[in-house]
Length: 410
Image (cartoon, rainbow, N blue to C red; front, side, top):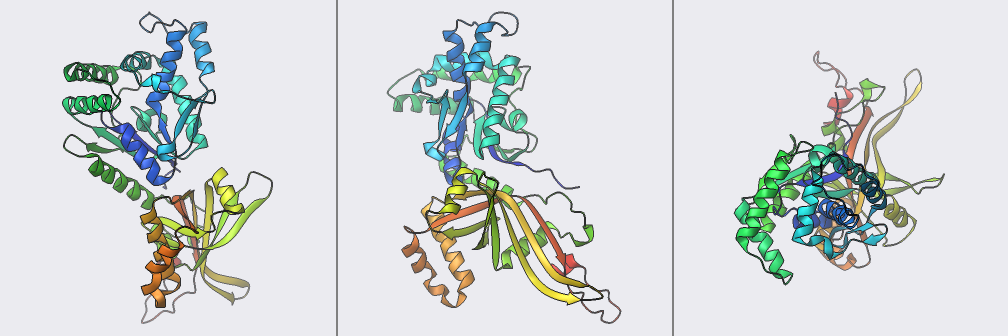
């Protein structure tokens, strides 16, 4: 039985002060996707409720007209990627006023209310439906995005988290008592872990990273290792009708590795699909291709990064009582992202040059350096893989059986 499709979403959960926000932004920057600051969403709603005069300490659910109006007014959206990601409410960027300690405590107070959590879950899922993204919070992997592509849970001691928060406050020109900060963090932990609705805990399939004795670079490297492993382990798509011609994931990857050219299919939002042949290279479970920095393909990918990429190899027309063709094919369904990091871009260009002109591999690095400014490089991250083959049977030798299509690909 194959896995179900997973959303191209990376979740970063953990308690207050574990470094989720900073690291989530770095991961989003590396992947070229928006970063969803769910804490800012809760803080924005807390401010709206405060202004409406709502008291979360009162008994009963928040079913009065004032909170209901606040829910309806908090229409969230995202723009930008990585460090340029911005959360908007009613089309306006969420400001620094939501970062105050008092607002954080108010957000924690409303976060225990089931009606608030249900509203936020739906609002966050709506953003995930529109974007591939990195989502940081406390229940992203357990409740909001249970089918996320990769789930991370960060933890650290309360004292270390308090020290990090103090440094953040001082960097912003504010000072505080570390003992008070630690006390608030411990109180927040108890509140988050003991709430009846969506308590703070790691998802069963999350990668747990204790950051107490790790610097930010080490934690980032550990997260990216987990993300790349998730990319390389993209599940095989829904089983096809002709099971006898279906090939496994390893065979699909081998075909993608040795395939010469592929076809990229895009949806431009009109009634006309768009597909284009490409040279490409497979590296670390992702597909890379290069193109001009502008054009129809680039414009479509900027609007909709869901793509389908297909490769065909080993084609041989055959007549055996009927006309047919021997072949092997692979299809990748996933998301495409522009590569912004110069080192990754250079590496992809070098790999492309070495693949298509191996006799000139010694000049690949020079070509990559020279092409950086005038060439765009894109990364396709697989979410689903599928393969199909009908290969010429290997003649039986010494009583052995002919190879099956799956065997013939290896």
